[in-house]
Amino acid sequence: MSDNQTPATQADSAIDNATEHTTHFGFKQVDKGQKASLVANVFDSVAAKYDVMNDLMSMGVHRLWKRFTIDCSGVRAGNKVLDIAGGTGDLTAKFSQLVGDTGQVVLGDINSSMLKVGREKLHNLGLVGNINYVQMNAEALPFPDNSFDLITIAFGLRNVTDQNKALRSMYRILKPGGRLLILEFSKPEQELLSKAYDFYSFNILPTMGKLVANDSESYQYLAESIRMHPDQETLKSMMVEAGFEQTTYQNLTGGIVALHRGFKY
Image 1 (cartoon, helix red, strand yellow):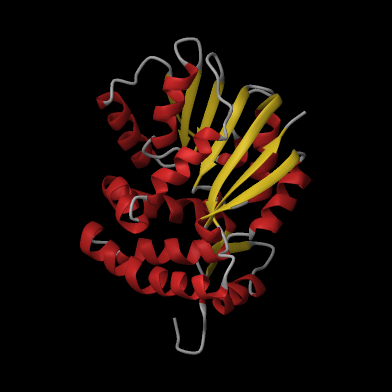
Image 2 (cartoon, rainbow, N blue to C red):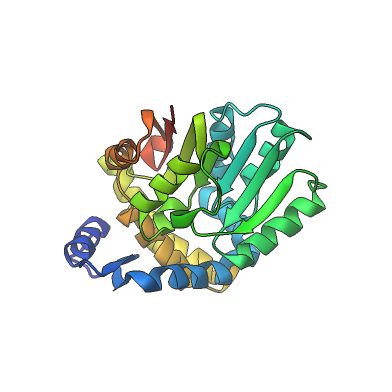
């Protein structure tokens, strides 16, 4: 990042340079058909150290964000849950316990390396009876209409090439009365927090990634992808456009993360 450019101006520039056939990969513009494989390369690289890095990067706070998401889920015994971009299975593990023997949880991820780590982790926890693992693209979810009581996507939507298409796909497979929860990095509410967060993201995170995961570039992409993600109100509007009702969001940790919630009726 040059001295006279902030993350915000770089994000704006990336958006301005987009064309009909390109999309953003961090601050870079790439062909839309390339983004999924580029994102896959990132997660292939970080999968083995993913949980360790999550704890280090957030100082453990990601566990509180996910716990709040679970508390807002309304999941009951017998429900069917889809955990998109479920990765190493933090949400799936808890949902598996909540839905019980009569329910089902599908852990879905586009990346086979992340699915492998998640499956091994949950098997080691003894969670085997009511969890299925599916490699899938959020833009074309391979399930019939009206299949799930709850869909979650935690820290995954920003990696999707066509987010509007993905939201429509989620709406299609959600049962009437079901809800979607999107937990994602967002825009800090206070300028001072935003500046401190930028410094941490673009100076500390890549260094941490280099030291722990031997991969600074993937964590540079992480920081850039967060800045390219729609802000709270924009994502809310996208959900409404996809068909969701009673759409709300709640900022967590000053807006560094937001939990969006929408229902299908």
